[in-house]
Image 1 (cartoon, one colour):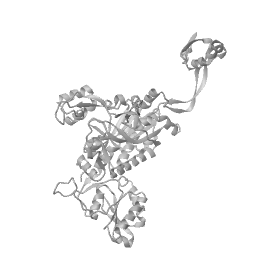
Image 2 (cartoon, one colour):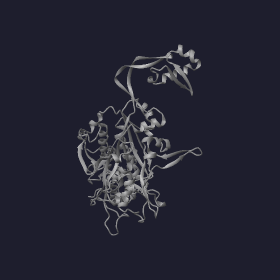
Image 3 (cartoon, one colour):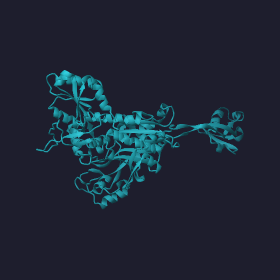
Image 4 (tube, one colour):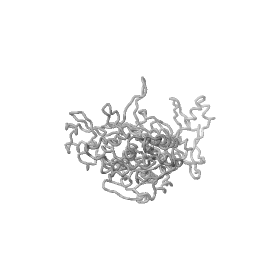
Length: 585
């Protein structure tokens, strides 16, 4: 049996193209690197993954899903740091003008080079020492230079605003913090989730679905009080076993509880989302034995991150990052507070109010009024806004009101100590962000689910475009979990005649009305139809045969065991629902 380590991306993408899962975008015009279309089955498959993600990270938590625009004004990304920080390093060929990522070229020539930890000068030195030239035409390469990866655009005509296509969905959530805070009744913690398209003008996208210029991210921003170190939900995942990579060559297998105890993971809330992420990936159908979590080194941390773990999967490309789980601290909210001047904070009530003495200024209007007459009211407001320290032990206070300065004698006010009851404090929440690359997860699922085995007796394989001339046709199966598979049930007449075809069509219509995803097929032999359904991961097939006319029963075939059972037609919906929704242990 083949697995993800035994195959290459070309095999997967060829099968995916032939069966309507993934298609190269703009293919009739020569294609465009970094873009893919999802065919009918790919669209269904991805939507099923989205729904599982929502169950884990929206419905299962105190979270809400929102949708924000893809086009974003420039000042948002100036505030967030993306205009300055969202960069890769490019080299360009002097002969053919092709552009490449410097770190990718280094990794291709010497996989042991830690390009993530090299600055601009270090990259240039490594390229020169290894005598790296253009891989296309062997021309000489320029010195590496930083380039911003965001797609630029102009918003509007005439007096337009400069903007970008978003490289992540997160900023739309941060900007809406105050709206979300009110929605959650002004109580932490809470989360806001978004599934959306994001855009990164990659220097030289390659490796098929692994590096895209337009992708779908599913992101959760979970806002919490950093002073509250306990996170009760972590109890759900404490016994889950994780493979953790702290640094290259250092791999540990620990439970979540052990990782917390040894301070391998720094907080309960981070540990919870690491554990929850693994559960999600396993339920989608990824192989647990090919999953690990790698901790970011300080030199590779994103500009906003305090701690970050990547969920990685073993694929034909090696270990591939699927999810980044970052502690973004209060970076984003603080940046937007500074840039916009708006309040983006939360009020944290104390268990018991605190009483304290505080100095307050009391204005004597009987003294102030006669001195300043119509300006007295504005001067009073200005005095009250000054820090107490500026008013102490001063004979005269200079106050500026609408550009005019006034000298106010100290007999116009007094400073008194008064009792004040404090019920809480305002804080800027911290954020844990699990960010999921849904395209990479979808592709990895194809690899982890793909097997080639000897065809069983009830299938008949058919030649495809990828088979070598004269070679035997391959029997391929995608072993999707039933609730993930893009087609849940194939519906066939044994023969497309004698009324069997009409019965099959009627059964297919009933199943579809009951929200069961079906595919009706009358083409070719029944063995070939089984093989086609197996290849796209359909877990069950329903066959209408000549006996069905007499006993009102049909045969259900199981993809993995090839076993068959007879079921009454009027019980079919209930039986299939149970089979499809059954979760793994």
